[in-house]
Length: 286
Length: 286
Image 1 (cartoon, chains in turn purple, green):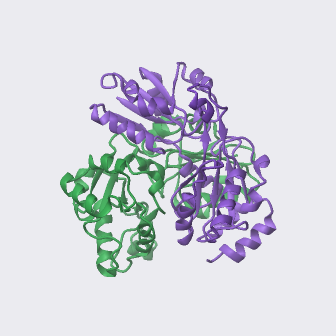
Image 2: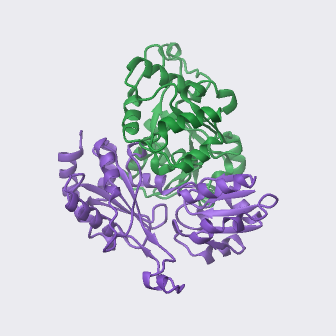
Image 3: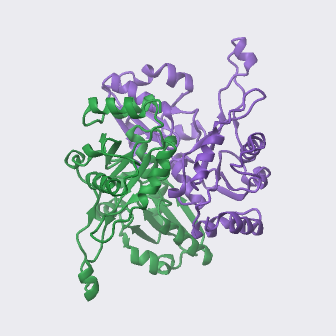
């Protein structure tokens, strides 16, 4: 059987009891390590599980899934995914491949950033579609997120933005030369995300949001050092030090808000007076 | 400290290792038992934890939260919530009350139906706002869900409908007489939800969806007997036997779909030919 086991958001103890039992008994254990990361290293997991874990990078999962699925018809294989197993499309693909091979599939759900973000104090019911923000380069500045955010904002909903991570990436130069040397990992910060958002608004000028739009920066959601900072997008451009190490996410508020949300989030505000006055003028009762 | 501990979706082993450690050490343990239920009884949890658990009903949480928070400044109190702790507004309220009293709060996230529903094979990125469907009565047929579904459908997104549960409810007659006798618990089925949806469309006639709109009925998501049935809303009116016992949820598909979603969900179709032909005509590439 192929088991997709969610690891939750933070450290080795966020696995469920059910998940841990499967990991301990499986013939082989893979860790998907390119759509998200835990806040602890592979070695911590291996010590905790008492067994080796094979890192499954993008190449392996997308091009060599038959190795992962080898003998899974007769043995148990555990495929560990940070967060919930169905957060990313890749895993849907793996399940479809298993089905083709007649391999039964079991899933062990866990916390996902899409529900864990509720800890910021916004009602999960008031979120629209989730969008991804990638690192802009000189030549590549994909702005499709802007249209998705607009759709959510038009109907008053909050938007969760998941921020790019780059692990095991080659520089264009090394790729061209066929040299398998990888760049150090990079994790987008709330400040980078807020800046890119404002850049795109500056270009498109369609008023989907602006420097004074309210947002929440989130860091290490679900972990012991979880941290939220609330403020305007302009303020959040400068809050990376306050937020600390990765992973970061950002929530852009929608206008359909509840008084409870105000009271809860205000606690995290960079500047409570600014927060209150913008909330009152642009959000409350809209 | 007040700990809000998510229990996940299905049975006693869905708690995280971190959550279980807190439950074992806390001075008192409460189980919130009115916004959702696990698929196992309180006694199973008590045996598994090796200690008593106090059921916290709506009355207790909303009117007597100070009892839950008693001495939480100096002792650890665990408040267990099915799914993720921030799925329901009630818990936001409890956290705000704790803050007022200067009590520190810790959260242990877990799987929520809002992410667990990804196991049905639809991309979580393509979901809009989540809506609730309540049991209609002769005099009370709230249709605000209809407008929310429209908002999601307008921008092509899927809608997760969470279905009503009624636990510890009094009949109007007993309530009027002040008799504290409670009705047996009731859990809305996918069939009841689909019928109510079609009734409201029949009244409003705004074409938000219809009998041939595609949807997925989900039962016991995250559990060993998890079951999905895909079909038109009309078909899903008659699939309660196939779906089996509670809890049920329903997903109404949006038109913004991915080929992978088709391939994955087709496996669950009541009638694969109907599914394919409606998909091709009304969804694919829209």
